[in-house]
Length: 234
Ligand SMILES: C[S@@+](CC[C@H](N)C(=O)[O-])C[C@H]1O[C@@H](n2cnc3c(N)ncnc32)[C@H](O)[C@@H]1O
Image (cartoon, rainbow, N blue to C red; front, side, top):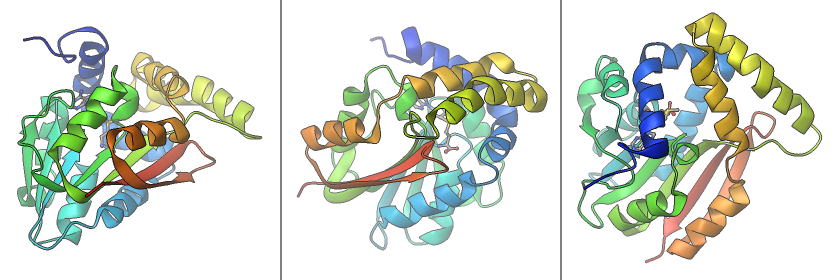
């Protein structure tokens, strides 16, 4: 069987995250002026799994959301899943990592039973996948009815700040990539993937079509990032 990880966009994305794992947290801190951690805290707070429940943090990367969730919900079993072993290795080294179960998984084909989680969180997964519907359908499948999905994503710029944000993404982000990480190419990918990404309205439409309800979102940081939430209909 083939998967998006081994072909096309999935393979390119996998290669980028294997390569940038060592400086991912540092670059994120610089690019968001330290706000990423705060957004991850909000994502963990909004998912609100029940006591003793099971939470999946998909595309966990270096585990920032998973670790926030494990700290916040000590009785919940938190799984941090990603298809990049290099990113997972960074997560495993962090303080508190023992409270999370780290697992290799491809978001296009999740290795979990139907309705096995009481909540799902994810940060910056959707813009990296070729088939948005397929990835959201997989999450709907493994989520229990009545449970929440909370998504942190970058957002295509709009409104008055659009020209300034576009300039920043095109010029400043690759420059930071070069200076902080000595890797301009990977961060040029970030700029192009964000510009090509769907608006929160169109992600919300896709979620509604799959059977999610109570959908909402809040934009962050001049509209460049967004936190979306949705509940699987009971
Ligand atoms: C930008 S990082 C975000 C990490 C973390 N969620 C955060 O907020 O810092 C995106 C992560 O998505 C993972 N990823 C991308 N496509 C994936 C897929 N198809 N299956 C699993 N993980 C994927 C990458 O390996 C990477 O670790």
